[in-house]
Amino acid sequence: MALKTAKDVLVVTKENGKDEIKLEYSKLKKALLNLRAVNHPLRKQMLTLLEEQKKLTVTEIYVKLRIEQSVASQHLAILRKAEIVETSRSGKFIFYSVNKNRINEVSVLINDLA
Image 1 (cartoon, rainbow, N blue to C red):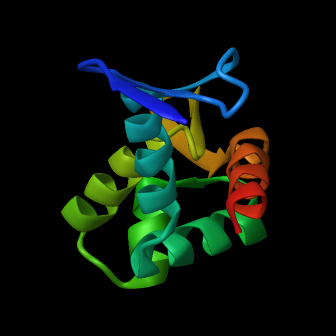
Image 2: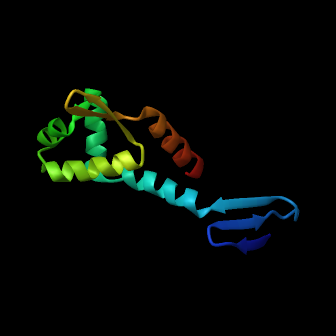
Image 3: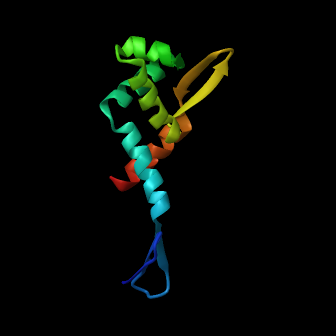
């Protein structure tokens, strides 16, 4: 197998010398973001709570988990950035819920790698 590297892509040539495998580091970084987002004790608790309650505001989350509002908001921001949770607005309230499609994608990735 031959190995070439570019700044953002790793290219590995298969043993047949014709086919290539490309590993894009930007996609790897995004995958790591998703895995780190769900692999944190407090965020696991948040996701479990959201799954049980279906949708909650940040206030309901921090009260139920007995944490500071700023801590809840920081962790929810990480989950939002990874698209693990979705938001919906009702008047002045923003509700958080689990993005089940994204959880499924993460689950498939983990099962493929494990």
